[in-house]
Image (cartoon, rainbow, N blue to C red; front, side):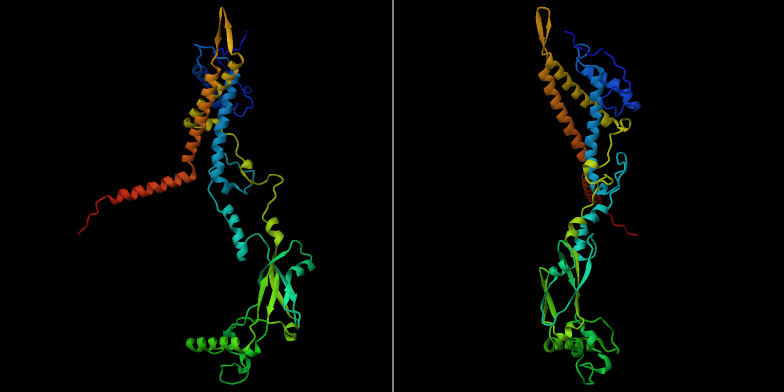
Length: 389
C-alpha cells in the first residue's frame, strides 16, 4: 500500500493554499514552511511517519489565521456596532482606530423626540375642520379619509388657547372690568371659543396689584362665562359647550397630526445596494494582515494549525486503520488524534475569546474604574501632615 507521507521538507510558493488570502504576504511565505516543520515534528516526525503533505499544512495554516481574524473581528463588530451602523459600507475598519460617536444613539432616541414633538423622523402636518353650529363631535378620522390620507392619522395637538387673564386686564377703550371706569367686563368682550394672543399692559402697576387683578379675572371667567374646552378620544373631537352661530361664522378648529404609516415607513431605511452598514453581516471587516499580527496572535495561530493538522491526520489514519507489515499489522491512533484535536481546538477558541473579553471596551473601562478606586484607597493611607508656616 503506497500511502503519501511528509517528505521532511517543504518549499512554499503562492498558489499552494486553498484561498490564497495571505500567499503574497512575505511573513506568511516565511512562516509557512516553518509552521510545516513545527507541526510535522509535533506529530512525531521523523520518528514516526506523518501521512500529510505540505499542501495540508499550508491549508491548516491559512485556516488558523482566518479563524483568528474571524474571532477578533467578531469582537470588534460587537464593540463598535453602535458606531458602525449606518456608516457607508465603503469604510475599511479592519485596521482603523474607531472613535465612538453618538449618531446611532441619537437615531435610537429620535422616537422619544417624535412623541414630544421636538424631533424624530415623522413629519407633523396641519389640518383644519370647519365648525358647525349645534354640532359638538367631529370625526377627524373621517376627515382624513375625505382628504385622501391612507392608513389613518394620529392627532398630536389641537390649537385652542384660552386668552390669558393678563391680556384681559387692559381692555380697549377703558372697558376693563377692574379699571374702575365701569363698562362691560373685559372677559365679556373676549368670550367665546376662539383664543387670542398674548399681549402687554398699558400701565405699570405694582406686581401685587396685578396678581390680585389676574386672580379676580380668572374667577370671573369661571363663574360668568362658558368654559370652552375640548376632549379627544380615538380621533373623535368633542367641543364643550356646543358651538353656536356666532362661533361658527368662518370658524375652524386647527390641529396637528401625523400619518400613522409614517411611523413604519420613515423608520426603515432601505439598503438594496448594500451602501450602508446595517448589521454585523455586512460590516466591512476583511481578513487580517498576517505580517501585522503580533507574537501573541501568531503563537495562537501556530497552536491552532497543529490542532487542525492532528484532525486531518486522524481522518487519514481512520481510512487506513491498520497497516500490514510482514507477519503482522500495525493499528493506527485515529481516535487519539481526533480526540486530542477536538479538545485542543475548543480550548484554544475559549482562550482567545476570554482574552478578547478581557480587552473589550467594557472590560477595559471597568478595570480603569477599579484602578482609580484602588489608587484613591492607596492615597488615603498616606499620612496627612499638618504644615505650620
